[in-house]
Length: 320
Image (cartoon, rainbow, N blue to C red):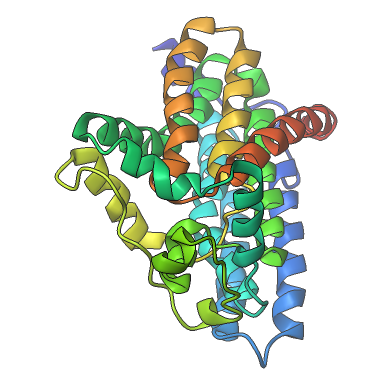
């Protein structure tokens, strides 16, 4: 009953303006809207992109109004949750912009070959094709969104004084990665290997596919145990919203690193150790299922740490 009372109890000092995370979203919206205007004649779906942004602005204003009418923990939770949920709309939007730029996968695949002497994304799944291991990898990859939900809800329930700050860090980190993806069109092995041809890849030949992904979105079938439950979950997610974008650095690894550091920040080591198992599986799974090059994973680790410490400091100042 105490929790329910806290949930609906009117805040005596409500937040009057936009939240810091909403300002971050508005800044990203305005910046990308300018890009759409300047590339209007080249973009494939400029009107949809513009109207999508108008709808997001309207939803944000609506959630602000709901909170102002009833400023309590529940309406604040809904207000923040909406912004985090809208990240699913912003992700494929990066493809709509970067598809107008020449693809750079041939450069990153060549770097991968130089660093590792092979293509780990091509060999990892072949070296360990067993159903049990395949399902572990798919489970790790599928754990990405549940991990985000868990950490956000955990802060809301048990670290409410840091809840807004944690949400700000997560959302801001996403938008930093999305900005990178807009100007760095790298699709990852599952798309590039399909476009370049596996014969070329196995011979160490990495052709420049130029604007191929402006017209095609086909990718390799996910390797692994095709009858597995988690395999089917990964395939379903790919069919629903995957686009040839967002490979370098890996936001799966980067955001998960941010989540792990946020979990450590709570001081609850039991939760941290449980999530760390999923985190390790997720990092390896991105290469196993051919979503990322190994260098994407390394870049995700580094950028995730940098973003966490930078955004935590910023959040300390801007989150009331």
